[in-house]
Image (tube, rainbow, N blue to C red; front, side, top):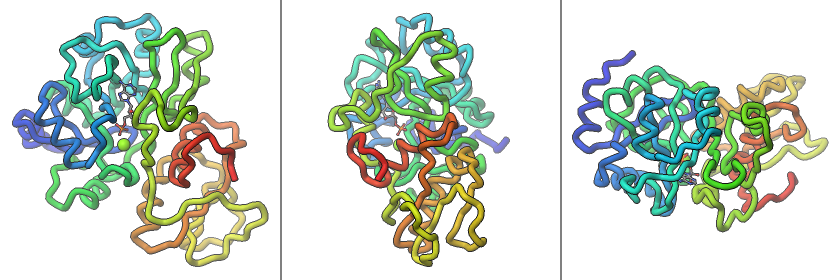
Length: 316
Ligand code: AMP
Ligand code: MG
């Protein structure tokens, strides 16, 4: 465990600090300090209509942000927290507009990361979007944060993140729970706990989604991203290939995952950044959409955004 003292002091003084979670690195600010939260939007150049997720270190802290906690939330919290599941609940009126972008709901989660939990237990709840400049791939290592915000930026180094993709965002304020952003906790896992079906809306109405963040093209490297075409041979040195198939000869520009989608998810943003640092023209990804794996939905969502789909276009 790194020494957190100076980072705790920074948060208490109204500054921002990047810290590791199991999903990606977050850019944290005191959830009750409007000036500190404004710094997040300025530093990231984040659109002001994109709300932030509150990160807590204990289940009790949820009650400071919402008093209408449905039974479904209790069930899911018991099963998945700490973990990569953000719950959208009715907010208490005292929750700052800067957190919710003026919505009457608030998203909350408890990260499954020893450093994050220790840090938040000392600072109190933190709002924390991904610690990247808006439009860049989310950071999965401390170096990524420094690449975006400079070498002297305060970041707690917790090595590479375990999941590598942002949390599942689940709205519990409607008649039926609705996944607003897919993450590593899958629809099926959620349905198995709740005992009934949940809706997935993240590809609908991309211009006016319920989760404002979904309309922005996150996750994008400078390099073009596209799917590997049928019968395309991965032999272009200007392309970085991310393949499921491990039968091609080993080469620095061919990354073979041997059908391990957990590993692909863990590395995806790092590979996007690598492609730009090393000057690749394109990142070519082998289609994994037919695989039976809980991460398919989340990975597909991120890859499609990187390709630049603005709606639920089929794979092409
Ligand atoms: P980030 O923290 O950058 O990974 O983005 C947070 C995501 O959660 C964005 O897609 C937001 O639109 C979404 N989000 C946060 N709060 C809410 C909320 N109250 N209602 C719906 N979506 C939310
Ligand atoms: Mg983000």
